[in-house]
Image (cartoon, rainbow, N blue to C red; front, side, top):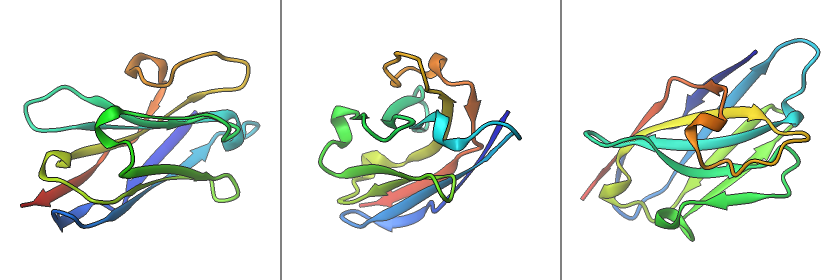
Length: 130
């Protein structure tokens, strides 16, 4: 079992920055280090979409084309936390951002599909004003 809690959302002007955090609580006997961590987002009236993923060992990172060069995903395994640094924000980045995790060791997955993830946070709202 993994519980995820996101934070860091808010209201920002276009061109601004935010850093989202997602703290994971992992069941006894498991380690945060073994989980792939992803970020997804859902804008009003739209389906949830992939944003970024970082592998359990940090060696593989993928981004959605829409945010490449502006967002950076990272993880701190000592703090059981994954981050999403968002720069040059645009109004179209307005959405609820969700953190997700799935067991990564020994698995070959893309990390960009919702169905690959077993655990989800409640989401944090990001609003970018023009």
